[in-house]
Every structure is written in C-alpha cells, then in structure tokens.
Image (cartoon, rainbow, N blue to C red; front, side, top):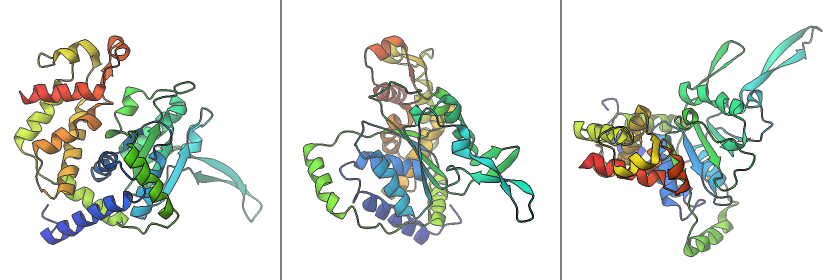
Length: 327
C-alpha cells in the first residue's frame, strides 16, 4: 500500500461509500445484496445474482454502471444465442476500391460492465464463451487475442424458480464467479420504500466514481493485509467443505458431494478485504471473513441427491464448515 497515501485511501473509501448510497436511491431495502455486489466489484471479481423475477437484479446492475460512469452492455440470454453473439463476428464488407475484406464486429463482451441476463437460458456452448473473458480479461477470436477494457465486471442473473428450458451452469463456470448474491423478497416496509423511490427513478444518476478510481480501489483492497490466523481460518473453512476430510462436520458428510476449490479461499480473502476497506479498516478481521462465507461458498458446494431432496441450504452448510474451522 506504499503507493497510496493515507489521505488518498480515505478519499477513495469515502467515494465508495457515496457509491453505495447512490445505488440505494434506486435499489432500496437490499443493503446486503448491494454490499455483496460492491465486495465483488472491489475485489476485482464477478457476481452471480440469483432471485425471483421482479426483485430488481437488472436495476441493481444498471444503477452500478450509471454510478460508475462505465460503458455498459446487456446480453439477454436465450437458447438460440450463439458464442458469436457474445464475442463478435467477422463481416464481409466492400471497400471503396471495389474489393472485399473482413471486418470484425465486436460483441457485447467488449464493455466494462456486462449484464448477462438469465445466463442459465443460454446453452453450455454459449456460456463457456464467457470463461476466458471472466478469467483472463481477454477474448481470443479467429486466432487473435484482444484485451478487454479495465475495469471489467460481469454480473449475471438467473431465476431459481423456473427451470424449464434452462441449462444449469456447470461447476467450472460457477467457480468463475467470486460471489453468488441471493436477492431476497423485500418486507412490506421495503415495498413501500420501493414505491416511494419510483418518483425519482427517471432522474439521471451522476457518476460517483471514475474507471481509474475503481482500479485504485481494487488495488487498495488487494493490498490490505490479512494475518496468518485469517489465512489459516479461510483455508480450514474450505477444507472443511470436503466430505472426505476428517475436519468436515456431519452435515457436510451427509449432504455434500464435492466441496470448494482453492479458488473459494481466494474469493473469501478478496471479498473480506473489500469489506474491510468499506468498513474503514486497513486489516481483515474475523467478522469480515464470516460475513462473506455464504456468498463466496454457497455456489461452490455440490450437494448430494439426498441434500437436494431435503432442501438443504448450501449457504448454511458453508456456515457449518466455518464454525468447524473456528473450533
């Protein structure tokens, strides 16, 4: 953190809080979901938003893009969507001299904030077209590797209720998302707040952060120190999600088929660092780690058939693994 002065860090942190406040003028009564999405953004990862239709998942992502002043594209997934519709395609065009040449028309992935709406409605072939972009921040088309603009942030949504005609994301694809954010149904008071906020919905939002400042915040978050105890706790938590390990709780042994990969531990640490930054601390605490256990690990646990039939929550199982790691 030597390249950032204390004053600069304080200014960036203040702007991050202003960003959260600006988002909540449009996406109201969902503080937990807003914070989780910001944790994913500041940690430099991608976020999977899951919730019933009409809860504002698209509104949340659009609002974030507007408040950041970043380029934004929306990709509506359907079964007939092809990889070329995501990455781009070559178009044969005629030049002024009468000759012909191929021109590469860039797809919606060439943006800074990409909303992949209802990602589980795209076929696995199309879903996999996003893997390189999400992991490497680049796209390879027709043998040419093209870098993506930074920051690059993917927010995908899926509806867990209607499963007909969908293609569940494979574990390798789920693992590319830093967090899975569950958007819950608001309370009656929250719905009243939503209805009241509609009066200001037409007013344009002014950018709170610039792209360069987002990159600065990501760099500050990545450099926040975590003690060896915190690193060990994150590692023990991930190991405890594996049913074959001696440290796994009974619920994990009964209901989990496969536990989290090491990428889950990286996600825990990255999200915990982002949470510490927003909280005004320049170190990671156990509270930070505990707060991100469920969003970081709930999509990385593969349940057994018995666990799925019993309706066991993967997030609760991740919490059990954390409790065992603490003991």
